[in-house]
Image (cartoon, rainbow, N blue to C red; front, side, top):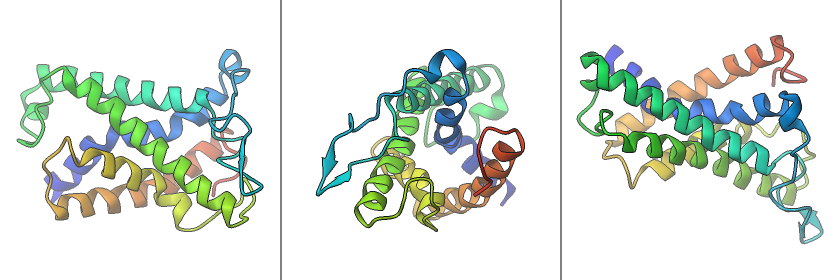
Length: 185
């Protein structure tokens, strides 16, 4: 049981950390000015496609963050046998895991952007909570994009989903306490 929980944390680490990268990038003074929206201000059916909070800066930060975490996973698995032995599903000693980290980061942020599209279309204001979708969008996006790259069983995907669904509120509270987010939820 503990091993499957640790694998869930390890496997989805690039996506989980990529989900918070846009918030961190927004708080870096040099990067803050680079805030071009993903939708370039365009609308669909009279409503913004994604909104002003989904930016190219955030997407780039998330993908880069996923790649960096993939690099850290590669370093750890290449130098510490315990990390290399976590799974036979993915070879974490192969440098391709860095690209996989970037792909997971992209999937997490794509899930968030797709959720934002639907949120705008049904009229939920930007910044307002849309439970449970605001809490699970990045998990669904990251897991879906991982399917072609990882041979995981359904119970492993369910474990990953549950672990990150439980971690997300904790991460939000930490971000709020660090004054990176205006409110915890």
